[in-house]
Image (cartoon, rainbow, N blue to C red; front, side):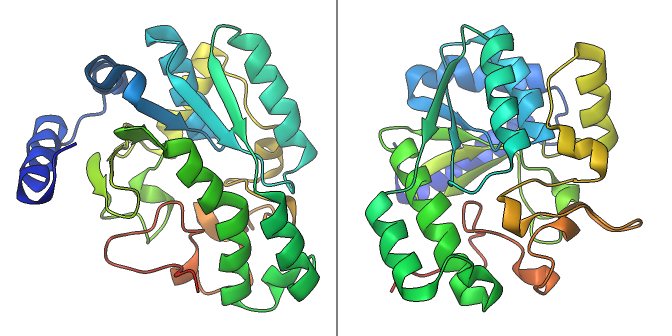
Amino acid sequence: MKTGTSMKKYVDRLSQRFHGSRDVHVVLDYFLNHFGHKVGFASSMGAEDQVLTDFIAKINPQTKVFTLDTGRLPEETYELIDQTRSRYSELNLQIYFPRHENIEKMVAEKGLNLFYESIENRKLCCYYRKVEPLQRALSGLDGWITGLRREQSVTRWQTRLVEFDEDNGILKINPLIYWTEDDVWKYIRQNRVPYNKLHNANYSSIGCAPCTRAVPKGGSVRDGRWWWENSGHKECGLHRSNREVFFEEA
């Protein structure tokens, strides 16, 4: 991978090349072919990620596709994982789990539902259950693909289609960044893509069961996540902005 100034120029060049692009097939085809086995797709099994899974399965099903099982996912998410495996049987889908010793120590010291007590506790839980497993999943890769969209939250509105993830030292590709929620669901319906049934019950963004609920009428996409916190904090650390620190390990 390039470093320093050369990396910035490289990312800027790619950003300009794909600026404003809504053609996900063209974007993915370029990066999947350019990086080969050195690029991976991180799927949360959300609606956006299922769209990208469908694209990847059609372009190159041997691409590394992985999801993080935090140990506290809704049953509907586990059902979707099995449905996705069945629908895309050639897909290279891998599951990463938290390190058990980290979870055991955290729960012994702070309890099972520590995340309700403070933002710091919640981010600690997210770190051990999501961020650390993500770091292992990204090890050895030069790029990772995500399902981020700008309109999902205020923390994502400046996100570009191509960025450099300084925390992981890796290129980050967001092919759906310019898509709307209507675009996502139109694609799912037209292509009969399997999706989490919780979406039918007004769950717009689905994470761990205790930290996710249906979005009240008129709410934004991320209102169902960590609803007891201020909207400015609603990230887990997987998509930490270069402009904001969401968690620093002690």
